[in-house]
Image 1 (cartoon, rainbow, N blue to C red):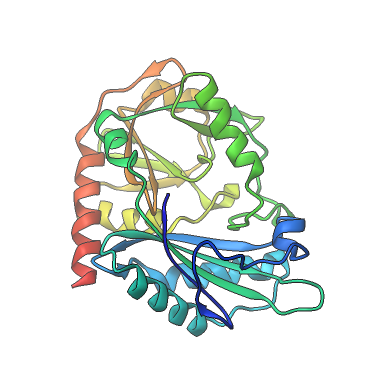
Image 2 (cartoon, rainbow, N blue to C red):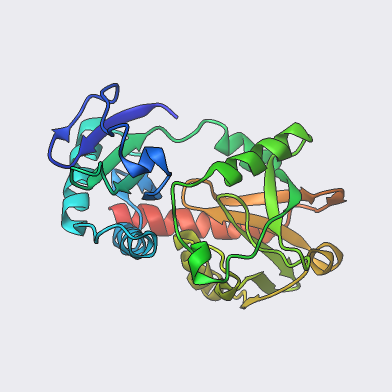
Length: 279
């Protein structure tokens, strides 16, 4: 993604080519930092307050002092105004800073990845990969940490084997989530998705879709299901995330799925809600 604008605490707007994190900041040295990624519609970040609240929760879990959410909002406005891009990606980072310095807040605006819409058109193929369940609090359950090496490795492994993305499954075969997505599937009119008690990320798009699904007449059931159950009974599968929105899934491992109507209905409803909120 091309960076369009950057704003940093204590400095304001910064040239995207300028360094903003010291080499001894634990964000770099140990990957101890938290972040949020959200989509911008019509110049307005969608569900910004909810993302900032989750950023604060993540900071508490990782042991970084509480962020100044008003400062993050100010930095976001600075970066968005500079970028002047009505539709974009906003990323917010909160780092502990160097041992002799202060914490660092960063707001970065980037272009929406060009691959997303073609992928939505054709649907994605997912490879199931073994991953530990993060239900214990010390495993950073539901936390957006920058320690993303394992997630990137999963994406790379999926692509190496001819798939588009990964789907995490625990040692008991229970379906969890993707590296950056929540997973959904439809059985009849029911929409099923893993429950938060499994340690998955409480995605803001996930929360929005739960509300939208009810309006569209789709009951949402949160729980625990094995991959075998999904592969045997799902009539339609899709993922959700802030940047990718609703992404149809046409295969998990070797099991093929037809593109159903639900993902398109939810995608349209999500866009209506997000665009309406920006007016």
